[in-house]
Each structure stands twice: as C-alpha cells, then as structure tokens.
Length: 256
Image 1 (tube, rainbow, N blue to C red):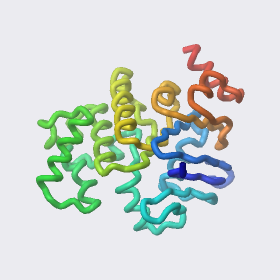
Image 2 (cartoon, rainbow, N blue to C red; image 1 turned 90 degrees about the vertical axis):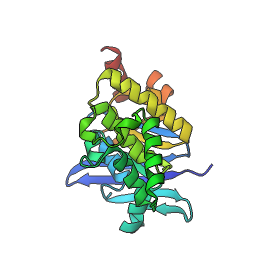
Image 3 (cartoon, rainbow, N blue to C red; image 1 turned 60 degrees about the horizontal axis):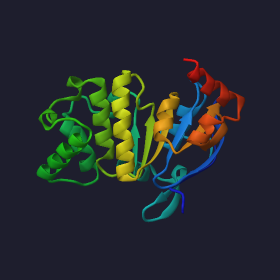
Image 4 (cartoon, helix red, strand yellow; image 1 turned 180 degrees about the vertical axis):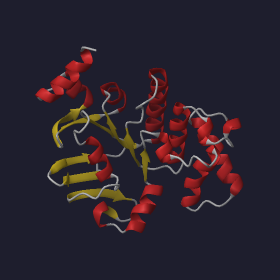
C-alpha cells in the first residue's frame, strides 16, 4: 500500500532551541497516528510543521495527491496549499474558537467550507450543513445559532463538522479534547472514533492524554525534547514501553 503521507528528516528549530528534529514516518490511508509527550516535547511544533502552519527548516513532507501523486508540501505554491487545506486536509484546533467563525451561524460555519470548494446552491449547502450538524449531535433547530451560544463541547463538535463536510482524507488534531469536562471528552471521543471509522479517515492526533491515543490511534510516537524516542503500535508501546521516558509517562498515568 502506498503511504498517504511520508515525512523524511523533518527539522524545525527556534534559534538554538530545537522544536523537532530527525522526524521520519509514513502514514497510510485509514490509519490514525498519535503523538504524545509532555509540554515542550515538540509534538505541537511537529503537527504545525506537517500541516504547513510552520515552515520547517529542512526535510520533506510528501502527500499523495489525488491527481499528481506524491508532492512535497514545502514545494507547493501558497494557492496549492490553501486548496489542499480546504479539500483533502483538515485541522481541528484545541480551542474551537480558533477553528470557527464566531460571528457566523452554525450552518454558515459548515457552509463556508463547502462554498470554498465551489458549492453555490443555497438549498444544497444548507441541507448538507443540517445533515452534518446532525452527524455531530447538534440539533437542526440550532442551525442559525452562533457558536457563542454553544457550550465548549458543542463548539468542538461544530468545528469537526466544519472540517469534515468536504470529505478530507487527512485530519490533523491538536489536543481535540483538551479543556473539556471528562464527561464531554468521552462523548467527543466516541464521536471522533465513529467518524474516523465511517469515513476511513487518516488522522494525526497530538495529545498529552494517553487514554485518547489508546482509544483513537493505531500507532503511537512518543516525543521528548524534539526527538521521537519511541514509536510502534499503540497498545504495544503503552503496554510494554521500552524507552525510560515512555515508561515514566505510562507509570505516571497508572499512579494517578
């Protein structure tokens, strides 16, 4: 099987401080990769470099495009990257407000992404928006409400609907359950797991919560000080960690 995303020797630094370095991995269609580590480990830097939000210093981020085969994201034009981010890629922010237009209705937030890829029929756009609100458990009678009227959990579900309505093949998620109450987290995780499976999505999820990657991720990378110190199948890494840092992460959770 051909990888959907291939990352080779990716490096990003901030002056003398390393953000991430020497990162190599392949992500296959329908696969979910979790990236874990403490604050400052480099996981968010890596995610943002992969998604094109940060410019890496060197390395390759190769994506299997629909029509041109493998393309290096770093060599794409700004227009090509923008179109990719509206179609085949999506980014779910930790804070939903960063991924929503707070002054636009719930239906408008979902419809905007459809319009960005060429949809123009108002009736069809509204119908798809209502359908997607239902899929993320937001009732139809909230379609004209603004996100500011929603709870944090509902805002996050709305952000997911906005991102997934165009049927992307790769979704980046930055602490998607961070800051939510435990009961809300559980509901959101169940929703994400069902959507990933139903749509056959590939995803890269950054989190400090090992329970999140246990539930969602097929494979796991553990980062420390900008380096990937351990990687493998999620259950294998969590049940039998080999690196001392991974052992420390796992044991700290078990002691809570």
